[in-house]
Each structure stands twice: as structure tokens, then as C-alpha cells.
Image (cartoon, rainbow, N blue to C red; front, side, top):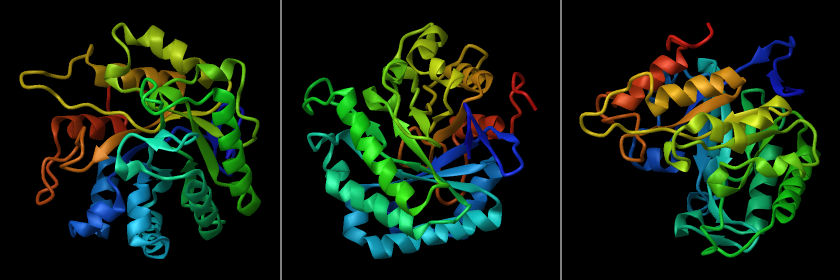
Length: 306
């Protein structure tokens, strides 16, 4: 649950969620890797929470009924393994004008509302499912996907939150800012009018030039003083000859998030989608970033609090 700017458990203890994202269950199942073994490998990484991205095209083509069967399996496996679940409606674009970055993200306001009505009623009372990420990455793509104001986006999110809470008041809705879910500066004046929610940022390396930390503070970090914030997507791949030193983005972003008490979920436990944490489905060999995030998830980086 939410208390002030923290996530707390039933005992009142503060929880910092560290986790990772899998790829779309529809993709994993079609490639014949959908199994408890896959989730056991996620657990070995040290994840406390698993982000599950649901693409609108996969939701439609598989059908909601059949897709829910995959989600039920994931939730059951995560329950057995002691991990929480975050369900993410994985679209990118302008939901207000219903213009999207790629056909796989095509949806509508009605379908989005129906998705959350279905999910909220289905997982009501399920304590493994902790978060609902209402919309993955809002963007107008520099005007190529039309226009949307923050008050318009605020209203859409408040409508979804009200809908979810009519079924279940315990799951925590997550609201993303603009600029592909990076920018939370509108919260200075117009926070979402709802209780028991948290905010999302996706602080990829390329969002801002160095020095990053002052810009992170200005763009989203400030919000963590007042609200719970969770970085639900970020990651990196090393270029040939590159290494991870103290000044590398990976160390800098983890140190910043942990220092602010911001929970985080890295992207993505898959050998094909990038930035990839796996080199191979056959061996589950980790990429260099996968190795880095395994240490971070186990809180083994030297600057982290134990």
C-alpha cells in the first residue's frame, strides 16, 4: 500500500521494489519458452517484482480470455516463487487522439478502459499482483502523434483509476508522465487527483545529456519527496570495448534511484528485445547488462544500502 511517498507492507515496513521486466507473455509462449523455469531464472536474478507488458495487439489477437490464462500462470508461478507482479498496458503514443507509434501499440480509450475493467475484476484481492501500470509510454512524438495537454491526460488517468477502484482498492495504479514516460514536472502544479497511487518514470540514458543527476532531479526525482515513484523501465547495452565503471550510466542511475528511495524495474529479460539482459534462450546466459542488473537486484553494488 501507499503511505506518503513510500510503499509499505501490512506490517508498516517500507518496501523498495527492485525487479525486472519480462517480454510479452504472448511472445514468450509463441516461442515455446513460457514455463515456470523462465520465472525461476527471473527469481535467480534477484527480482522482488516482475513487470509483465501486455501489448494491445497481443491482447486482441490471443483474445482476453486466452491471454488471462497466461497471466494467471504468471501470477501463480510468481506466488510460488515469492515475487510480486506489475501488469503494464504496453502501448506507446497519444491515447487522447488515439494515434500510436507502431501498429503493435494501436488501441483506443474504450479498449484501454475495458482492459483495466477486465484486469481489475479478475485479479481483485490477489496480493501477488501489486501494481497496474495504466499506460506504458505517453508521447506525441514531437507532434507527429497530435497533441494532448496534461489536464486531458490527467483526466484519462483519473477515469481509469476510478474504474479500477470500483472493483479493487488495494492494487496500486501507476501513472506515467509525458516524453515516453520520463517527465513528471507537471506534478508541481497538477498532480493526479487520487489516493493510493504512484508515478512512473523511464529514465533511459539517452533522455538527457550528462551530467545526468541534476536533470534527473529536475525532471522526476523531485516528485519522490512527496509521492511514491517507480522507474518501471530502463536499461542499457554495452558497446564493443565499453566497460561498466563508477561513471557508467548503469551505476549512476542505480545509485541515484536508490538514494532517492525510488523503486525500479529494469528492461528486459529476453535475448531479442533490447536492451537485452539475455544472450540466449537455450542457456539463459546473461548479457553484460544482465550481469550488472543481477548484482544490482541482489543489492551487491558497493554504494547500495544493505
